[in-house]
Image (cartoon, rainbow, N blue to C red):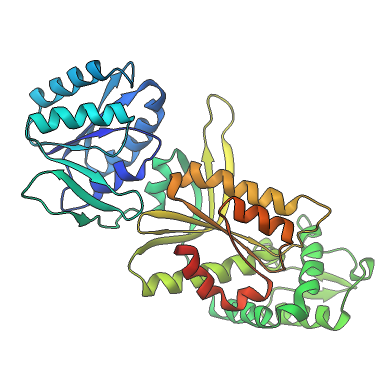
Length: 375
């Protein structure tokens, strides 16, 4: 039975992606797992079982006891045929010990390059290094990182909605304050679908506000009645309250995916839950996400103003910085797409956190920013 020995660590992707590559996909895996990596082995197993890959966990008491690790690996080699080693994960001593035993037994050993997803054969003169096939989907990817998906959408946005958003983006300077004002009214209508009186707020630019309301009205998202904004249903209220930029960004990602085969999955409006210890599940929302060459890219979309006096910008950046390693490991990337300009303070912080920003007038060239984001 073709079997891979995996050294489980915090980096899930190098252990998972080779198992889905049809060129070397195994029938079974053996996971060498230290005490602190038990959960990660369980998460990985949740992905492997539906793929028809059998798994067995072999526990090690001390990930730095090289003599004990050698003995365990030797026993695994004796008990199994058609065995090969993925030397990418584990502690350095785990990797060294396993490598030495496999090399002594003249068994195949491979390593997955963390940046390029190249499978490098360290010990097998008959095999050549190759690019791992990009077959993993967001559902499996996030499950392998300990997340349970409760909502996900891959539905193509409506053409007329994208056209509406294009008009806003192309006149972003004209509409920028009207957007925040309509956002406020839509937010206040969350329970009744009827906003407060428009006269209750001070409009920065009456003409821009009226023009923006007209754009939404033409698409059936808003009606004006008795000096208020009325929304036909919650879906349309959500769209007016900023959902339109999420759909627009997702459509841009979809278009890029159709042109680039290395983007092998994309989705929007993703809701996930993570179980931490025995407490209540922690919920998170992701506006848009995609996998490029087995690397997670997440995009947070904002239409509200990130004022210098509040912490909205910092909170958004810290959310992205937190989600990146949890949901995608060290190779994950994040971007903030903001309709309004991001203050210099938050741009500096984003650069420190290695988070990309596309805001204000930059959105007109979002396609180019998307390419830079992917790198």
